Length: 244
Image 1 (cartoon, rainbow, N blue to C red):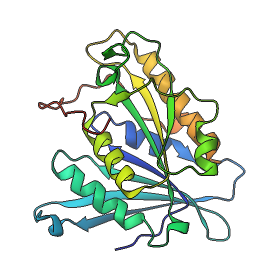
Image 2 (image 1 turned 180 degrees about the horizontal axis):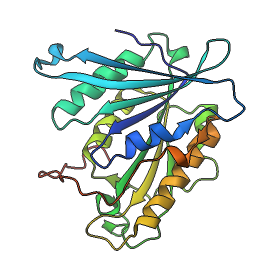
Image 3 (image 1 turned 90 degrees about the vertical axis):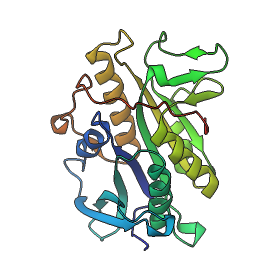
Image 4 (image 1 turned 135 degrees about the vertical axis):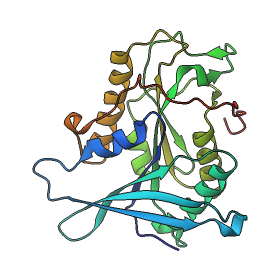
């Protein structure tokens, strides 16, 4: 099943902390823009992976211009655990990737990740003691848009590893498929850090505004319904950093 998407696709997870839905809701057409926002939901079978009791469920939001051309798409995937998440990511990417490489969309991967799950080999420690900032890096082939996205944003520390299961699976699939992509990482606090709500929101706003400015959309803070301190059930099994 091939789905029609825009040349730029923002890939998000409906994570337990609510970051993915918050970014999706906050991205709106500019006030004087002719873009229209269209939403739809999809389910894809996972039977070819031997999974019969679960489907890949996700929402697609398209920003369409007056000529009916898709300018930007936002893909909001339901949250899954291993090993299902790997199959889901593969199936969803296959559904939005054209057979013709010339029309393959560029993926934008924005994630807020707890500082305790970000490691860099230089000091063999987390970056939790560093000032929260936004990191941006190219994944896969270079494109003009990817270069525009990374311009002016700090690169991640050398050999950064992300101990975060959904993102690790997504990056692995993107690299295997050699898809053009840009990764935006915003470190956030957690129960093991002294980060404040205002610091987490600052990184969230910085990421949203940077993203919106590069894709000609409006980042509407009025649409945000996100509480970074809301308690959620943490994963009981740490994910090995296989794809860092």
